[in-house]
Every structure is written in C-alpha cells, then in structure tokens.
Length: 628
Image (tube, rainbow, N blue to C red; front, side, top):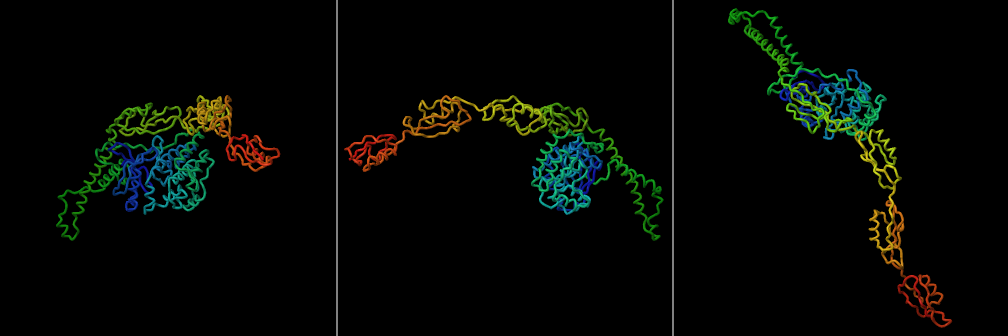
C-alpha cells in the first residue's frame, strides 16, 4: 500500500503497487463489519466473478479480489483523475457539451454491461472516475447489488446519497433492469450542469416521493441536452431510453453543441512507486497512512520512550530476587524484563521505519524503466512489437483522420516508463452524421441538403422510373454516414417507352406474345389478357393489343392482349309446329338467319327444318323451313 485515496460508507480505497506486474493499482477494502455477514460474502463472491470479465474502456477493470482478516477486498484499475463528485464538490459545473461527453462515455459502459446482464444499481457522481487523460470509467459494478442484499446497514448519510439517484421503480422496490441505471445517469448529468439534483429534498421520503409520478424536467440550462434528459428520465421504465438509445440521443445532441473544453480535473497526487518486491504479493491491510508517514511515526515512538526512561542499572546492581521476596513485596523481575525488552523493541521498530523509508525513496531509482516507443501515425494493423508494454486500443471518430491510424498515445513517445500499458487512440474515420431524406428532391436541392449535413453528392445515375424526370428516387447510404462521405444518387429520367412489337399478324398464341414482349423488357406482370370470339382468328391466337403494334409503349405501364376464343356457336332452336312468323322470330333471337321457306301457298305451320333442332352452328348461319 502507498497511501489512502478515499473512503466511503462501505469501503476504504488505497493506491498501491502491484510489484509482480509493475503497475499502479487501487485496492478497495470493504469495511470489516461486512466480513461477518455471510449473505453479503456469498453475494460479493458471485458479483466479483461476474464483474471481473468485463473489459471496456468505460468500466473500471477488476484485476483481482479476495478476503483477508480485515475484510473482503478488490484490486482495481487505478484512475488518477478523480471522480465527477470531486469535480462538483470543488464548485465546477459542466457545460452541456462537457456533460454530453461524460454521458456518452458512461452510457457506452452501461450498454456494454447491460448487454451482458449486469445492472449497476448505484450510478452516481462518486462512481464516475477519470484517468489522467480524462477517460471516464464506471466504478463499483457488482458491489452495489451485493450491499443491497446484505444484512449490514450503511450509515444514514450513505443511504440518502444513494437515494438521490434512485429511479422510481427502485424506490418502489420493483425488479430493476438497465433502464434504472439510465435514469440515475440522467439525474447525474442534470446535476452536473445545473448544480441541483432534480427532486432532491431534505428527507429520503421527500426525495423518493418527488419522482414517483413526475418525469425529470428539462432545465433551460441544459440546452439540446434537455430533451435527452427527459427521454431518459420518464417515470415508466418501459417508456425510457435504454443505454444504447441514450448513446444515440446524446450523439445527436452533441452535433448541436460546440466542442467541449477539457474537464478541469484535479489528478490524485502522484506518489513514488515501490521497487520490485520479487515474488512478494501486494500487502493488503487496513493501513491509515503512507509508508513514509508510518516510518516517521515509528521513529518518533522509538525516540520518545528512550528519552523519558532513566538509565538502566547494570544487572549486578539489581537486588536479589530472594531479598525482595523476604520483604513481602511482589517480585520486581517482571518489570525488569519488560524494561529490558523496550530497547530491543525500539531498535526493531526504528530498523523497520528506516527500511520502509529507504524502500520508498530508493526503490524508484533502481526500478527498471524503458523508453516508450512511438506508435502515433502507424496503422493499428501494423503496430510494431512492444517487448515491455502491452497495447490497449481506444476507438474514436475524428473528421479528417484516416481509418485505423493511431492519433495519440499515453504515455507519450520517448518518455521513460516501467513496463505496463500503452493506450493508443485509433481513428474509426470521420464523425457520423445523419443522412437527410432526399426523396423527390431535384439534383440541386439534394446537393444543397447534403452539403448542409457535411456530406458530398456523388455523380447521379439516371434510371427509368414512373416518376417525374429529374427527381431523386434513391440514394446510398441512408441513415448514418461519416462526414464528407460521398452519397450516390439515382435520378429519375421518367418512364421508359419502347416500340410495341406485332404479335397479331404472325398469329402468335398468348405464350409466344408474352415472350415477344419480354424481349423488349415488358414484364409478364405488366400484361393483362381478355378473351373474345373470332371467326377469323383461331382459338388461342392474339386478336389485337393495346397499345397496337408499332406504337410507343411505357415499360412501366400495362399492355392489354385480346386472345381469340374462336368462332361463337349456337344450338338451332326447335321451330317445328310454329307458324312461319313464330319460327322466324325464334331463329333470329338465336343469332341465326331464316334461309328458304319451302311449301305451298297459304301454308301456316313448319313441318320440318334444316339444320335440325339442337345442331350447333356458327352464329349467323341460315336455317331452312319446310311448311304445310
């Protein structure tokens, strides 16, 4: 352990050196009262195992965990930039731009954890920490749930602190999902800008009651961040943004805000790092100060008794034990032995103090360091070997930077450092922007809309479409695209017309006619067929088309074909026994004609007919009558 860096209602935090892997770490030792709670210990072990695999730039890494006599402990990634709580307590408020940046990083971390089934349950400014470069990481994943289910009770002040950021469903004791964390983050961002926690009151009950039926309001000071806070702060969790949706909403708000200034972080004081301790593990203890302070205290304790005690008499001058006993007084030998132990104890303590002081002062001078290689400007796929360092990649989008190029690194190139991690910032290309809708715009209008969104209109492709010529009918990509990317456009050149082929004169059937139309790109789905009787066109052949052969046909329109059903036939009616006038009327009604009428003058009824009754003949055929 090097020094304490913080304390809370449930744990003390120390900065320490992992002498095996030569890195600075934070050690969180939970209060000893928790060690007596078996329920908490079971939950703590389960949550530690679940959280340890999380690997995300915006979640504090858990390196190790365990249990000692002083209580359960976690070995964590050391973040030297302090917490958002430290920033706010120093009187700093964030601008909406800075709050959006903090919110995006926190929401990215929450989304990563939520997709793996983990809910934080205690998102608050004290759990949003920064490293020396301003990167945000969320602390205490898993511990909040373990504490919530423990029988050990936090002090009242700590409980109120958690309630300040509790969601409505959390206040009601309902089952929680990741949207409870989103609600808490919305409260944190509102506080960071306005200096006030929405609904916070003097009592726990008043704080909870204030948010049970009211959404988080959008303060005017939040600007474009206000609608995002409202969407993340609804009373009903089902209506609330999830973490992924919050990332997208904050990204949209960021495009309406100026670039944020760097956060005014006050890094934790950099302490000297101890020298390599061989195989000895990092000691875990409930230390109350740094080793240097401990050395000074031990030295002072060693000096004080020596100065106050009288000079010890030589052993020969001490009264015999037997004489003292004869006087009826208690034996003086125990006191003499205790006084004789003090000088040795003082010497041992002084030696320990000197050793610790020397270890802290001399250790860094003998610890091996190496020059940090330069990785800036390299492509992430071509990074050189780094024998003494591992490389951690953080992806960002930056307009003007090529994809995959290393934009920066920590530590800086050429500096001396002990083996550890080099964090490189790698470009994912230009910032993403929303591609506007271009449907129905002219080419000039589409070009102007794309320029306003920092996009470029590509060379248009003219295509036939059932739309006015010159209007945009399609574009690619849609949705989100990097700044300055070229958007391809498809422009209508109106309906496409073709010369209608002749499918009547060759006496094509329907199948042959459809094939002839397909040859000029008129699809079968655009062809409709009707039937008609014809005495001149065989059944199944084409009688006519609309448009007619040789006319201009719209490829996107409809072609109508009339297909012959052949000549129409009719059954000859039975007119035997009818008068000539009655027979003539019946034959005409059937679509036939009366042929010859044979018989004597004055005959009144039909004796016979030809063709005979019931015979099928073509419409318009003649029927002869024989009368008497």
